Image (cartoon, rainbow, N blue to C red; front, side, top):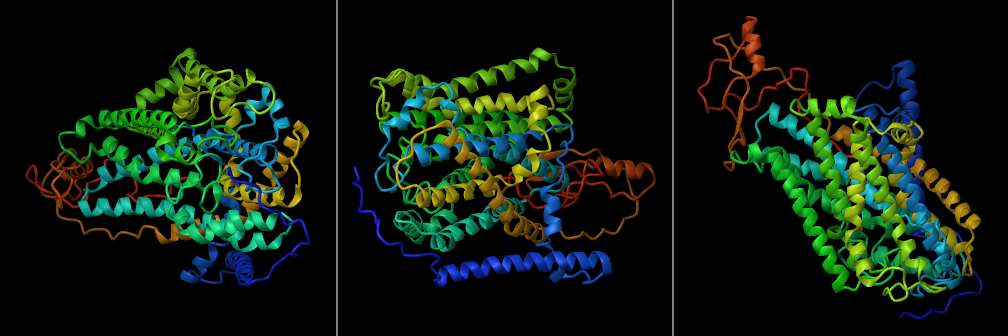
Length: 619
């Protein structure tokens, strides 16, 4: 065990410290404020006086228009066609509050706050309240699983929409697919990087020099300065949960921005897992023979990945002797931050997103209509009741574990003297992420089709919409805010009281969202506007019409997986051309079956827009 280092309890060094890093950070902050002011003034003068005229520079400056970004933040959420995804906002916001609540406990009451070097020296008096019935509600461990689930639902739904448009509106070439998937990854990275870099640099190069206390200097040097100086690049490459690794017991990671491990897990699943499932579900792995079985392939792949994740997790739990993982205590490096352990909620959300998209297609509309409007109450009530029961089981299990232990610190490295046996603990640790994914799949599946009664009404309210847009920034900022507060204000262990706990939780919720609002207006929304400007589709030129010379055939596509050639080849004429020819309009001359009639598949629905590059999916 690591011993306590000598703490500097003498004269403070004084703050702020104006060195090159802090001055540069201040200049960047001032520059962002000036851009926001200039963009807002330019937008106002253009709307009132018609100046400045349209052009690249005004469009770039308009990305920082505060009124424009405020409208994005305050936009009223609407239904998504036949679906109702507005309850996602409630899930996100409540999960963020739960994360801050969990960090409140782990930061104040279950950590010796004089220094973070003491290998989690516990205050035994704070563990007596853990035998109370409400203790299990404090630990926000599963909130991150909810983030993974919600993000995966959007990936499955939105990406399937784009892939369906591509399959029905143009041929799929090898080069085109490589470009599309490259944009799929690049868009996501560009969405995440601006806020991540802003928070990293603010905490590492600015905030750390603006405060001072007998304990802050050492804490900042170890947790922020040294780690970010050595491994900032690993955080930006989203590999910090794998390299360089950290202490196996206790939350002592060796990477910059401690809570960013979630972004690494999400990105790794987004890049390496989601495309496999999406290609299997939508294209049947680009195989002509497998195309008819693509839905079974995608669903089977998800189930296989779930089974593999549970098997690997069970092995890690037993082989690594993973301790009871709650409130930041347990095997952090081998278990808590690894994608193969955390992926079950993501896979469950991905499958739900695919099913929701299937329900919006021509083949699935009848089933969705039945579930949304004509299904008996018990058919939707049963999944909700089962989900709530599973929720209580997963959240309350630690309370059962602790209730049977002796007074003082409960057993954490083994189950001796606890309310559960060692085997029961290992089973819980291996299956809890799967259980949470199943719970969310059942609950969200009912809510997203528009059922769910009062619960859906509460989670779909407008109040949650702006808060949900600020969740990403609040997640990254909250940990920095808590670190600065705890390490500069507390010089002794804090004893638990419900009033103290909830008071600090409320303060950090409000503070996190306040700074997240500033970050959204100056960084996140402007960079999102720049990204839309960068990837905006170019207007297409209309092809000259040809003289009518025949009647086309209905659309029917076959798959041709030959490398370097079109994956989807048109064998029959489009329905739209047939209708146009019937009206005496121009139509293309007949083509023999199997011959490529065009480098773009005709759209089945004339109202559908041309396929755009992969859109940025929500974090």
